[in-house]
Image (cartoon, rainbow, N blue to C red):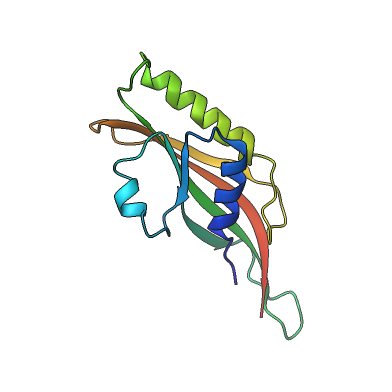
Length: 142
């Protein structure tokens, strides 16, 4: 199966980030409730796999290299006690998430994580958030 365990990412981030930061995944039962009310937070989201070859180089076996993308959403409140600048708070949490994940090789992956994309999200919210997308490689075989 071409799927990394989101729980491995949650465990890695929970161990590395400040205990006051909510770390979770979109597969948790409380995600829909907590995502809209608990900040600062880091949410490990969905993943996407794209084949990097056609898998036909091996006799009688389909074996493909796959680039796997994992989405991680970093969320901070726009206004919180003692924080003057939400941008600084967001940038610091993004840096902490990058420090925890960049260069780490998740179980079942063949390469360390690298950053694929980073994008700030909706600005008309009571929170500030950035969506980070990390990439690695796996091999799938029938």
